[in-house]
Each structure stands twice: as structure tokens, then as C-alpha cells.
Amino acid sequence: MSAGTEMARQLPYNSEIEVWYLHPMKIKFAHAIVRRLTFSLLAGVALFSAAQSAAPQDAAADDASHTALMLKNDEPVRAPHAMVVTVHHLATDAGVEILKAGGNAVDAAVAVGFALAVVHPPAGNIGGGGFMLIHQHTGKDLFIDYREKAPLAATANMYLDASGNIIPNASIVGYRAIGVPGSVAGLVHAEKKYGRLRLAQVMAPAIHLAADGFVLTDEEAASMHDQVLTGFPASKQIFQRDGDFYKTGELFRQPELAETLRRIARIRTTFIAARWRGRLPTRSRRAAASSPLKTWLVTR
Image (cartoon, rainbow, N blue to C red; front, side, top):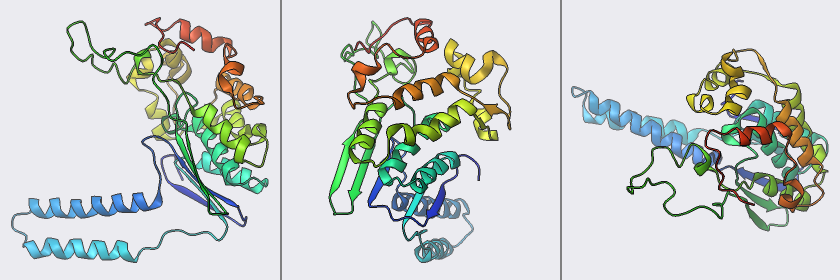
């Protein structure tokens, strides 16, 4: 199955912890998906019927009832022991690999989180943040909040110009859109406190994907033509090869990201900032320095 398709792998493994890995704006609850799908289908039926003025009103009601009945009789996919579901099949495979290696659900969730940073950065990256909801076999529920926070240097008017007008896209593109990342701290904390395996072991699939690469689908290759990526020298070089765009079926490698992940995997404490500060790969520091804005809000 291609990227962007929900995938599930069923495993003959009894995990003692259930985890729902929630990324901001990318929550993948099965029930939420079913409700959204139900609403969308019913709304689509209603709008189609309204557009057909000659169609009797009871026909629309019958169609909606028939659709609702079909969905009502559908059954969710179930597994007797464990299941991994992500937005990208390679991230799903990473979670499955860790479960088969003896990891628990937290180990698998952390592996998935770092794998998504490589194969699907819009839904998971080390420069962002997220949440994790853990349900232990004892019945205890835990919630970890590692969402990004505003930098100390942020101000209430930083998205406004001198006249008090909103600066277009200032909150979503450029240095002012960047929060203090929480993904690395949150995932490392979860792994070290609730995981069963070593951090380096659960990060191994992500490091492999970054170093050795993965084959791009049509959708992934097309997404790299984004004009926002073109606007910054580093992203233009990494994702667009300075104009020699990647094509469908090509292998996409990210050696600098692989090196960054290796350094994270060597962290022996959950206090990330002090250990990580100033130790990013040289090219990452050069990319920051070459930013056309040459301005920072994240001060420490």
C-alpha cells in the first residue's frame, strides 16, 4: 500500500501496554475516523440530493439511511494481541519490528514516532511536538504532553507589522513560526520511563530509513515541489536537489538526519537540552546560519 494509506499489522504478541500516539492535528483514533467518515458520507449524500431539484426529498432520506445502515454494520479491524497503525507503511513496519523484538507498545510508539520523522515529516518530525496517551495493563492511564512551546523571545505582536496589520504567513513560515521542539524530549522520556528496550534499539529503524533511504511514491515526489521548500537554501538542497527534483521511484536518503538521530540515540538522560545543545551536525548549523532571515527566537 502507498504512503498516506492507513495500514495495520496484526501480531501474535501480547503487549502489556496500550498506546495511542497522537501527533498535533494528526490524531488517528479509529472511532474518530469512523465518525468523520460517517458525517462526510451523510453530508455528501445530502448535498448531492439538494443539487438535484427534480429528485424527491424522500429519496435523499432513503440514501442517507442506507449509508448509515451500511456503516453501522461495519466492524473495526481487531487483533488478539497487538496492532500497529500509522499513516505510512514504513513507519508501521518499524513498530512491528520493535514488537517482534520483544518491545512493548511504548517501544513501538517511539519507534513509529522517529520513523515518521524520516518518511512522513508533515506528521512527525524532531522539530515538532505531540502527545502520548498510555493505558497500562493495570488500568492506569498516563498522558505525556510534549507539544511545542513559544520561545522566551516571542512577543504578542510578532505577527503584526508596524501598522498593526497581520503579516501574511508569518505564523506558519519562517523563524517566527518555530516553537521550542518537544518531540525528542517527549519520545525519549516515554521510552526511558515506560519502554522495555534500549533507546538505540527502538530508533534503529528510523536511522536505517534515513541513512539508506526509501523509495518515493508519486505523492511523496510531488510534495517536494512545494514552493515553501524552495524559499530556504537548506530545504531546497535537501528535498529538491537545488532544482533537480526527485522523481517517483527514486531513493531518497537523508544522511544528516541519520547522523542527528544517531546522536539522539546515544542520549543517556531525558534532560535533552543540555546534552544536545551545540551538537547538531555541521551542515545543520550552516543551514541555520544561511537562513535569509538570519534571526532567531529560540534562545536556549
